[in-house]
Image (cartoon, rainbow, N blue to C red; front, side, top):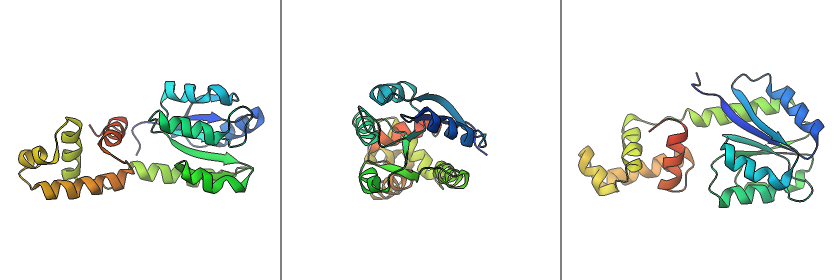
Length: 188
């Protein structure tokens, strides 16, 4: 059972597409829509302000594409997962290169949307052991692998093995991302 709702932002240049997504997402009580916008130019700023868990992002928009918005978010170290929602199949590879969590084609079906949300929820319930949680908490306190090993009475090698496993499970690239992730999901 999820403790908190999945905070989302919808970005699409067509209000009708946003309205449809709102209707579909209303069938998923775990979703909370923080904001919606048809303004691609200011969408990254809105996302930075709200720090959502998920962003449903159109690809082809005037002024700034969804891929450009995603790139801007990545450069600003926003850890929201992006689900691209588009009518165009040919952007899929580029979306993957932009760290897309998912890529959904319009018109969006409720089943495809539920599958994407369920995959996201399953990522939140990763099988992280108690030892790994202990290590995450010590990483968050700024301890290095040697210091963590001393504190937990295990070798540096064991700590490094756990850290690699934790990064893989959380899909974080480094300790900074891991601390942000752990904070967001109340692990620390």
